[in-house]
Length: 321
Image (cartoon, rainbow, N blue to C red; front, side, top):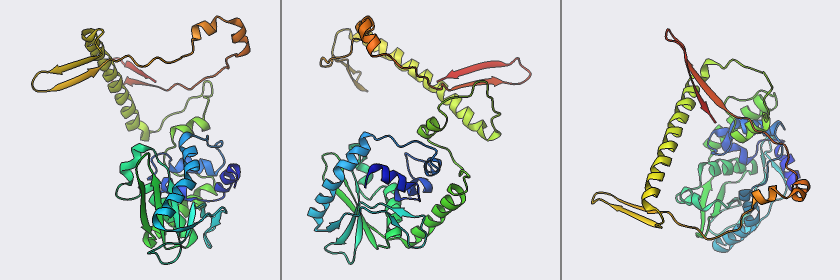
């Protein structure tokens, strides 16, 4: 199945990778992100290194799992639908035709996460993967699954996930509400969208347009304003501290502080030489400038101003981003 066909199929229902976002346990996507994707209001998702790694390593990890467990795997290439709730769809990685110690068939979900995700796989599959697998078990009518990951240079990690009827029932209620009452009606669910979705939906501001922000944003405005003030102050303090330390180190590569109570080690090290573009020289070469012209680009800047209103003369403060 081609990637374009796969993306088109995903718009015809709720898939396993959507489940965690709808249930609120996906750290990368929100329910609003999924809504706008299903409504076709977002462009194609850009391929990234994580996605490429997953596609390339999927067959390798599946083969390693089969070799280690003795499972006989079947690759499923067709889109599957729930026999009753036809809005539930599944693209499973592998069907387990048979496996020592297991009765009947199951399914295998393969992941190739980054090395820093190892701790999340130690005891059990992450919550988002659990939701995805339960969705697939519901669609396929299967009793069990294995979630398998190969993380960096570590050993293969896999966990058995039995079918959970109570979880599936609750999950299907939330997913059906999302699909029937929101996607099909065009009414967005409550919640917030991710930064990437907002950038795609609203890449440019309309000149002169102003909106009255609701009272419900009062707390978030204070949180943003105060957080940014604190961050800017901390960044300034960090920079000041760094300059004091560097002033004492001069051309030393390492510094050691030990007052008998606390020990600090500092490195200010010259890295290995590397080649970099000489933009100053390139800018002076008219031939290169004409051949490789820059393109006009813009971005939306975000600013929050705060004005204290009362008997005292208003004082305006500003935070820029």
